[in-house]
Length: 116
Image 1 (tube, rainbow, N blue to C red):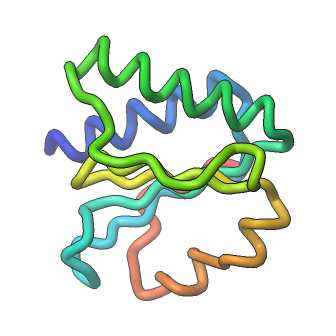
Image 2 (image 1 turned 90 degrees about the horizontal axis):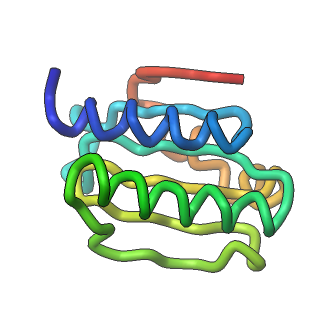
């Protein structure tokens, strides 16, 4: 298993532990040089989104010794992007997720995992 896939799967588990919803992992290696995997997930509140963000940051640092290269957006704005290089996490409220429609934008990518 690649390091990127191991990181992506671990982050998905962290999101699931915090009750994140509708988690999708897109394998974008064939369609983009931006990253290997996009993780797209929904949180139902600003508080939940912030808790997921903090847990991802803390647990990936503990397990992999890695910090995000960049974090963009804010939980209270309805979206957060956490960039680990080969894995990019997109965390949205359901409304912002529908607005940005990343699944539609990256529909050429293979769905590696979907957890509803």
